[in-house]
Length: 150
Image (cartoon, rainbow, N blue to C red; front, side):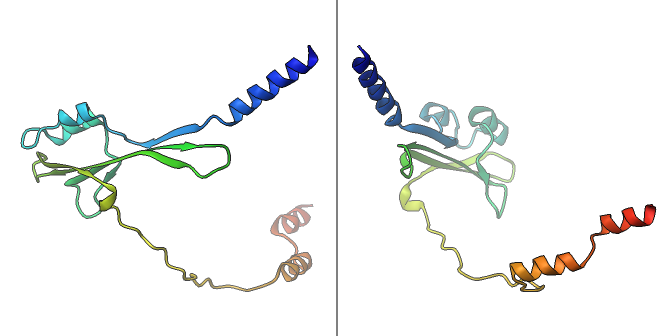
């Protein structure tokens, strides 16, 4: 009886530990809702009501909106794996009418390399020990103000 409980517990623990964690980030647009956006007829307000606020607005002008979403699955401590990813670009005229709807693919993604430089900081390059000893020799302002008030 006791052995069967232990085996059942271990089986349940392994089953729960192997279950993936699914996470959604951004805005994964439904194709039906996206089809409601009509080029030449829909306005910014119509798009916002139908699709919600955009994930990003273009940095250069406010006439391009992006809806970006990603669904990932992660097992235990492993890196998350992308299950689904979708990006949609909407362009507007100056008057706010939709001029284009384009679904972006992974081929449209551009890698951005980080720069391996160090930003200079001004000040002392003291070691931890030097900072510790230096702070012991200087009284803190709170200690000084308490002594003067006595």
